[in-house]
Image 1 (cartoon, rainbow, N blue to C red):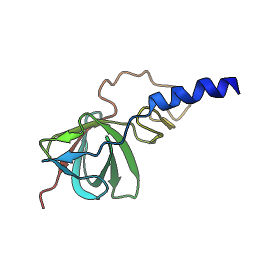
Image 2: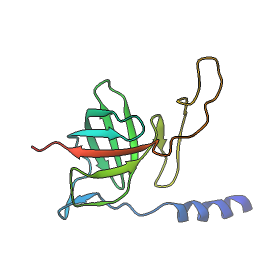
Image 3: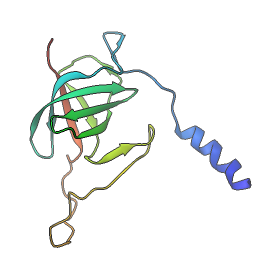
Image 4: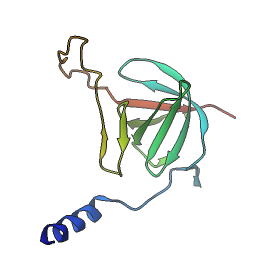
Length: 130
């Protein structure tokens, strides 16, 4: 019981209050919006849908896969320059922690590749004009 009394306050300190993503002072959380995303690690550009929630964006790919990224800013000034960080296969638990499997660095024979890509996990979102 003593451990629980120490752990619970720490968990409350790690969680942050929910603040919506805003563009021109308006809340844009919760709606799926057509967009293009650029992955800095691969150089790939993808047609997707994106939804925002607090300081995160969920990217929905055409093959029904998705990933969630943490945004660099909550208040957006340019819908063609929204950056965030998140690796494929990661699931956000809260504002601080995420879990998931990262098998991108495994070769077919089980050897592990060295981590050398500094831009891995960095994404840029551009909202398609309506």
